[in-house]
Image (tube, rainbow, N blue to C red; front, side):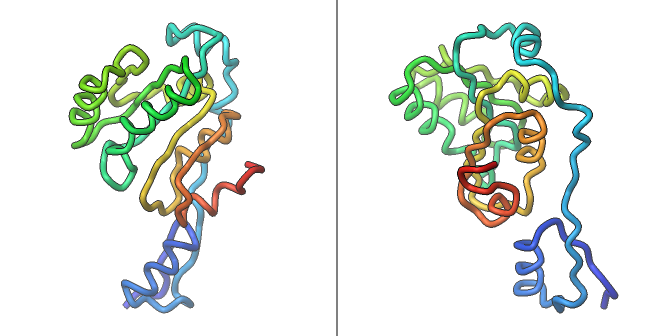
Length: 174
């Protein structure tokens, strides 16, 4: 019944057409945007503010602790990275229904020495400036703002190869 509907990515456009029956001609893609002026803090200043050492790799997850975002995979990822890389610090920012179960899994796995569960935060630019890598193990995405925020901060993004993420990341380039 609409004249036009906006969507955040081409993958959401295809999904809305296929699942919602909205004709493609009525679907207009307007991608999310990020205020890049919020990003650009020096890494050393960000790490100082967060009480992090300069010489340890920092991996962050910023998002909702829900199955869509792959929050239930965080414990496995932390364990695997620690086995492969050794010393690394993980910052987990956000809230959601799986947050406590992720924290308990990390506890049971003996991984709390390298993980800090930050809870919901408003200082995402600081966290991303301090990070070496943003991990986003999503099962599906429309277009994750956190990917664009990490790119604005100059932080490497390692994300699951899902439709919405593919539109924001060019493998091996961005």
